[in-house]
Length: 549
Ligand code: GLN
Image (cartoon, rainbow, N blue to C red; front, top):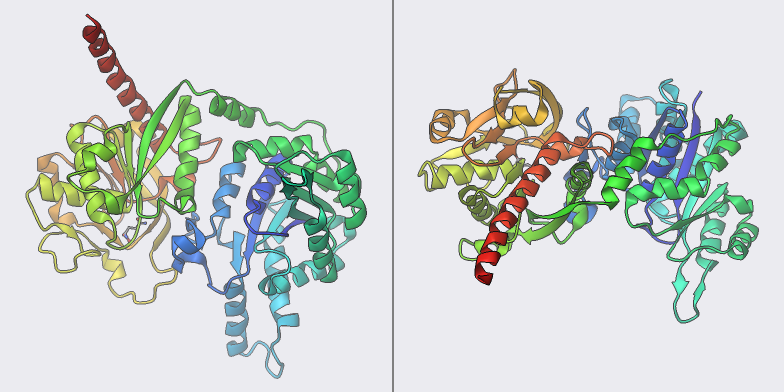
């Protein structure tokens, strides 16, 4: 039987429930427990796959092809184990199941209601992973903020589970904010008191209160929160702003968040948390030897959550190389042939991001041309790879109107075309080519050097693909497919062997990068950027000396 930890949030959104959940899970995992985390989101979309990144940030894709909340990315990056479609549930998914059952006649004769039918389905989902026998502890993060109308059924489900299970099988952790009022020079506890009161009114009382704060919490303040929120003083946990999210498990260890949870769960606490690998990573992360500038070209660069996994992958790969990766955001809509050299001139590497639709693609193409012609390390992901293919067609193969049929359905040179399997699909939700697929790598290629193996599996999220009709032209002109799906022949990797470092992939390697297992494509790309930086500076120095003479 698994034990359950529920994590709720109060006062405001964006307090970092996902990071607190992942950090707690990491500590429990480091003590030898088998842990997973799941997220319950209160919105009505069945999954976030149809949401714009402006609304919801990145859509994270699991091995089994679920389009999920970006917090699942944090869970995987911290725990180094995959999640699945069971780890993310929305209100939409719950209602869909209940309504489908109603249509099938499962409730014949009965009025279908929020309580008990919706709450029963929520409870079933909440306990599902724990019933598999694979985990000792299941952490459930409840999206939204306590007090929101839409999260009420989730909280009610938590209340019922607490009532149904033995006391020692559940813990509720409530994350709140303790604001600092500059004028009064004081930390304020009232919003936390109100938020705990609101949660208690729904019948759920927190066992632990984690307080996000910009200032340390004094013992006096902890006692005050404990007294008015009716928890033990040691169960008031300080969560100060950290310099990196990867520091949070260490901070939570100091605050004994894991120990207090385990005590409530009545689990024997073995001494010793093994965070050796984690701490090695942190040491490298904090002591870089060089800094490189990597341009991130995309149309959502003003919203960092849109590229969450890419940014985190650079942090993992940077630490591995002992390099600080400075991301330079370049909005693809504002890059032109005329200003490209000025915009990209100081970069040591160029990453062209995934995306959908035509906005900003001409800027992406101009940036890729610049990288190809100037020996600048290039890495294209999904749409980034597709645009590298289009750029090559236009400027090397001389096919001036070459394009993806996503952008120009009438092009006479559709070098990127809709996949055959997509042609009959009309519904948008969950219908892309999603999840993990195998890829066979050509020996002797850059991709082979990067992965060091012939067979890999990476995650996908796309509808268009390289059009194999043009393959000969590409190979003859020096852009080669170095990775293909072994069954369908779909091109997964394109590279230019004559270029110092030019690679584009149809899949999303950023979705599998973790602290303990950084994605090889990012590790090698950062290394290439470092080489580029060092070569450039080696050239610069003699020039400076000659200037002196
Ligand atoms: N829009 C492109 C496609 O669907 C690329 C998708 C992506 O970058 N994730 O094929």
